[in-house]
Image (cartoon, rainbow, N blue to C red):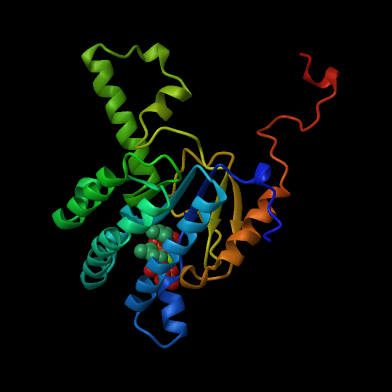
Length: 247
Ligand code: IPE
Ligand code: IPE
Ligand code: MG
């Protein structure tokens, strides 16, 4: 009994999984322990989103800016990514989850990239939840990459600059598709940290103080219930009177 109305669930949920280090420090552990526990939370959240019938779950796993972290932490995270990808294949298959990824994936170490590509290939035929991992992802980098590809097309004569509109930009993002309906950030910070800058223009935002390693199914349900009570207007009117929509 979750009290969730299936008609009021987000179709695309995006999460900034923050607070692994703070959770670990608070427990007297090394930061790495927080990352390990955080990987377990990914399985719990993914399984529940698949069970609820969400279309897409996009998780901010490693940012373009996270390369600034100490080398030992980066190396640990990349090994953990590989371990996670291999370990979770059976669970993803059992839950009909299709894995995808966004970001500058060529920046990943070769072994992690290979494990990622294998998991993507293995789950490609699944038609349930699309679990999209944002890896070496930056919202500005993504827009820069889209702009660069448009300039290349203009130079090649295959794109007319006068025809460029919002859909032209959207179509050149790492994974064109539905924008997130709900964005959750754990660990209390009220910032976007360069996540999906283009796509979240009208996302509903939910911030919880829970750190990612302690983000439970109950916490997820609380965010989904909160979302169900939101009124989305997209700049328009909720229940426009006929005269209000006339020009
Ligand atoms: C999020 O947790 C995981 C990554 C960014 C890879 P953090 O590592 O940012 O944890 P805090 O914010 O330092 O607590
Ligand atoms: C955002 O968390 C990136 C991920 C969750 C992967 P950060 O911990 O990197 O963000 P800041 O530095 O607090 O803004
Ligand atoms: Mg952080």
